[in-house]
Length: 389
Image (tube, rainbow, N blue to C red; front, side):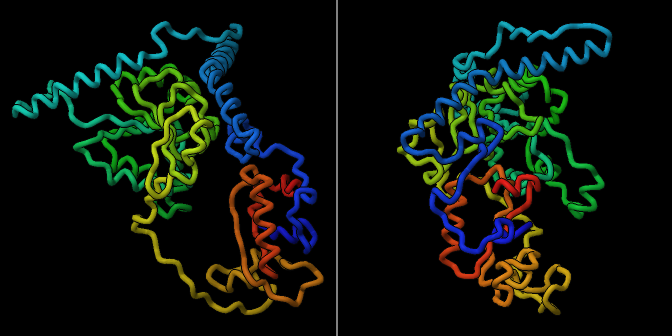
């Protein structure tokens, strides 16, 4: 990490528009850019750009599939690039799936009312089948915050299915770095079915058929447009489930007519912004994110005490020295002309640079201006972008 004052090389920062020239896109991916603030006059462009990208998502997935097939054929000595045809029965009929679910549920309710339910496997199933699809069911920040939530679903109401397109963590990583804690395994222990679907990572049509055959009623996308090379691109456009929901990774509209709802809150998605979304809002009462990490048994209360630092410039040691003394490991956090003064407060942000935008950075600088001798520590990720901050 580094001190923003040290990196920029000045101590008197100003947050006016003329001082900061933002000469690059905030993200290389159009959908990530759609989530960043725009002026009120241009805000509708977010939705328009998202809709244009969403309309091509399935076609792009087939084109990528065609490239993979071409590479495989070339290894065998021939073949040419073609975009695979979309099968005639896709996308699936949402109305047909919904009608089937309603009729099945009505039969179940009638049988329950008259005491006709037994143990026969042929009887309709009461729980609603809910699926979560993502690549990140491994050691990832989102799963750290979310994996304990699966302990609290009522099995009489929902049957939880996980569709994981990503790879599990290496056992050595789990034993060494994670000290034996496997978040993926915890999810597996607390859901009804965990489907490892890595084989469909580049085959959204195959994955759609797999999910559809399981009669999933509600499919929740946890990847959004945060592409990692494993996102199930094109999957939701084939509508393998009658109700499809966006949650967690992406906070702006998907722009897709095939996503019914977005799980959010009134701060992230206030009512007056509904015209910017193709989805309907499902507001959570406190926060859009499913933060179950407070229930983890490994969670310890924050330690506010620390051992005194032996001397200025000494090597960093965990649990030794205050945040002000350590100053994010900067040897001159306040600038050379303020070497004898002490850091008053340490602000931190450990997101990668692509998540920073002009409006947010200006607000940070305004805070630094109002808190004398405060510093802001940022993660150098990626290092080569530091000069562009």
